[in-house]
Amino acid sequence: MGHRSIRQIVAATHRLVIPKYHCPSCNHYFRHRFAGIGPRRRATESYRLEVFEAHDGGVSQHKLTTTHRIGSATVERWYQSFVTQRVSELSGRTCPRVLDIDEHFFTRKKGYATTLVDLENHKVFDVVLGRAEASLRSYLKRLPAKEQVRVIVMDLSETYRAIARQHFPNALIVADRFHVVRLANQHFAKFWQQCDPEGCRSRGGSSA
Image 1 (cartoon, helix red, strand yellow):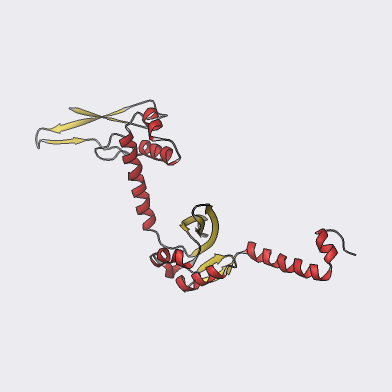
Image 2 (cartoon, one colour):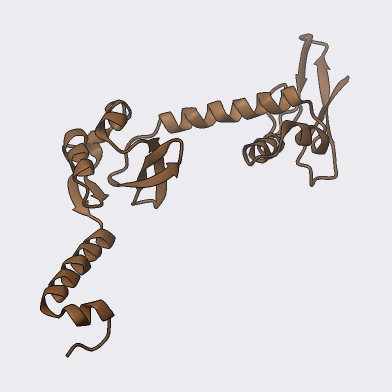
């Protein structure tokens, strides 16, 4: 009877030894299956996930080989396995019914990025580099189930409005309240400046 040793999370203090059985009647070898341990694997999914999240968070392969007592090739293999799995999960998603589109500064090298948020579930749906239609065109063309988007919330950017009209024809375009309030305040300040320049400059002081 053979044995297989299984690695668990670092915080654990026990090592699980899984026996390998042999049936003399059919000459078949088999092991007892445990939840969280894949076939032929020598580590639990929680252990593999722990390594992935640590490496994804910036811990080097060299450090993980010391703390988790595994080879650097194993770290790389597990990391790539989870990346492939998560990319597959993301590629199977469909557009949410209520979508928020906004821009934010990404990096000095990459410039701006467009963030898409599922407002019904309050989760980031995706982040795409660029904010112009030309930059987003390829991504938006292959986005699945765009026709099911019913509401798009955005700022008052004409660029994003044009993108929404072109790529989400069934969606109602709604300006988010932050930008609406800011626009109203800008017009109010402009009117205040025309009526009472001195009071406007004091920004809150009583006008004569």
